[in-house]
Length: 206
Image (cartoon, rainbow, N blue to C red; front, side):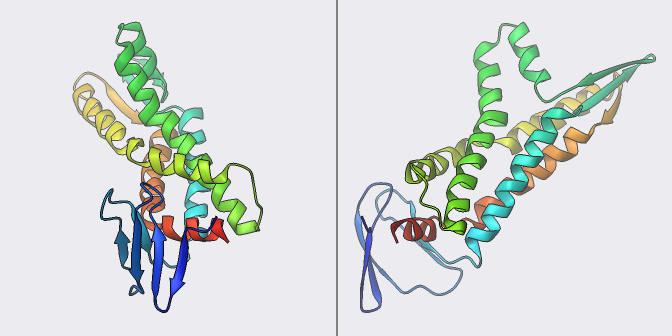
């Protein structure tokens, strides 16, 4: 089920997003070719793409677990200390009957990044080890679909805005989870930069 054939120095490649056929010439290093119809990346040259993307994805999963295990922020006011976790914001929104917003925060801030990173580890580790795991093409398609919906940086920005407002009423003590979540944002950004979808599709077709 190969999606590309080589004709001299030109590659005939079908877009994995919309199946439009392209003739992709040899590209210089650190350049990319996109689909003329849907804009999906056909080929992108990134050094050690699979190794780096796999490492950042595994690191992201670990950081996400740490961000959910430890206190995110502690609020101290008049001798009383209140510890908050990553899920506290979702719970408070539910208590205020803001179910839609609570679901959106839960999905974009926690669930989507987790599923995205797990799907990438599933696919990239199989390529690294030479395993032909079932449904890995579907898992990679899922990862590519979820990439725009992983909005951890927006979630973090909202938290920082809240911290600025709360700083006038209580002493804010940053927790381990806050630093883990900040590192998670960086890890997800590194995955987006290092991942070469064209290379992954090519290796799965071999």
